[in-house]
Image 1 (tube, rainbow, N blue to C red):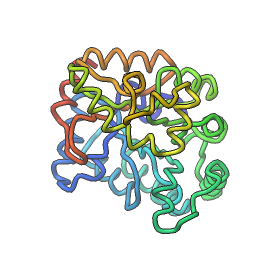
Image 2 (cartoon, helix red, strand yellow; image 1 turned 90 degrees about the vertical axis):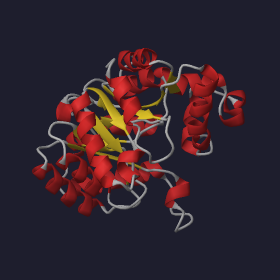
Image 3 (tube, one colour; image 1 turned 90 degrees about the horizontal axis):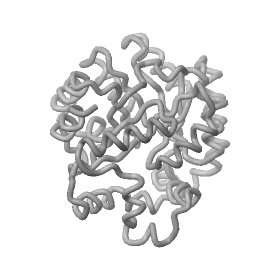
Image 4 (cartoon, rainbow, N blue to C red; image 1 turned 180 degrees about the vertical axis):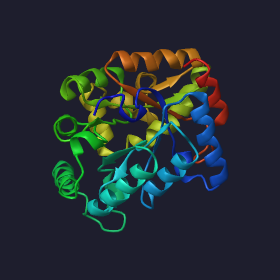
Amino acid sequence: MDPTIAGLGGVGVWSRELRYNSDRAAVRDAATELEELGYTSLFIPDAGGDPLGVADELLSVTGSITVATGILNIWMHEPAQVVREYRALRARRADRFVLGIGNSHATIVDADEPGRYRRPVSRMIAYLDDLAAAGLDTKEEVILGALGPRMLELSGTRAAGAHPYLVTVDYLREARRILGDGRLLAPELGVVLVADPEVARARGRDHVSGYLELPNYLTNLQRLGYGDDDFADGGGDRLIDDIVAWGTPEAVRERIDAYLAAGADHVCVQMLTVPDEHLPPTDWRRLAEVL
């Protein structure tokens, strides 16, 4: 996948709110405004349900912005059905949809069937095989939610690129080296538009602390050189500062630029300053002014 395919250059939005907020009219209005503000993508997560249906809803009220799953949980959706829905959606929406897939987490996958989550890399390879058997060109049409080196290698050889989450500038440099040129690198970046360090870090810590309980994120951060002191009490200042962009819109823009300079093709910002599933239009507007 050329990084510019489907509009995945510049800065997009990663949003639970667009996926799960129950006021769908407000969600559609927000999607329209985000496009008008100049954001180039809307990434939505998946913990079951109908992520492609939500993607279709967002695409239906916009005209140029790309919508992506970040990510579709491969343990919860049959490959052949995904390909059928993907083809129909792309046909209706002028190829503005990008299929991001990933393994999610054992705590989610095993919730109804303990022990189901195992051998995630092998599972991903088998899923890619099934997508290809159903007619999808995974090297051009799929990106992977990747963190570790093996999944990044798979993103470069069997997919169009990678969508890593909760990562740092140093991570992106290594990820670009592993992926090589010509593969999309589109990380998520948590954002707190608050200038007070104590308040901003506290909000960042609220976001990060839960991820430190998930082995794949914790292991990835350990690979990057973070230790017990960095993980204590929900995340030390060094860790929070490295994985959450906080401060003025201009300061956040500097972090976005650092991500791009480290090898990212596209950065999708996640606003962390609102309660879960509440739309944050003010922060989206403030940041858009400096992008």
